[in-house]
Length: 226
Image 1: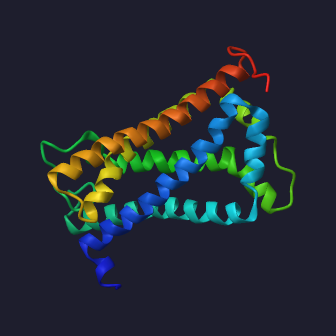
Image 2 (image 1 turned 90 degrees about the vertical axis):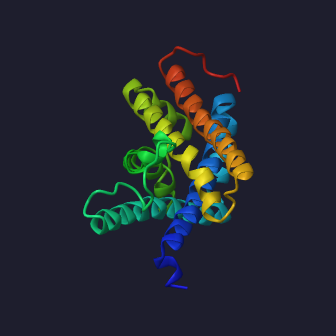
């Protein structure tokens, strides 16, 4: 088993599996956070749901897969650069004219995603889940949302991060299915389209959340009644 994961296919399989953790992690968080657009009170209830034991266990597992996906990508990048004398940029595949911009710049996107994740953990996780785990009072999720995205520069920075994740997902989604063998001409094209749809829904949702919170915090949009 260990030998399999040392092969090129094995390495890509690890990236595919941990990439699935990334998609599940983002899907769950987007759905929860999107409630804030319509009802701050329901958003608070959703955040309380996230504190339930089963969810508290599941979230760190998904997050760990997310973090491992990023770290392992950097490890592969360093290994491949060393093996190729510093000329290779990502994985072991050669660039072709048909490669997408995202596939040619996955390591750059990975760096942006990693930095954005660190900022997000500092802004939200440290003030909510971490405080809950350490027995400290959590900050109100709505006030935390408005305080963070009320700063226009921070809101724009998050939107840039969301766009980088969008590019990453548009390539990573179909690439994961290609790795496990679903790479014939018919299904590969379908997964590419599905990947764009999934990435657009997820990241579009996050952008709407940030934009609405920014507008409400600055008085450009009225606060919802419920």
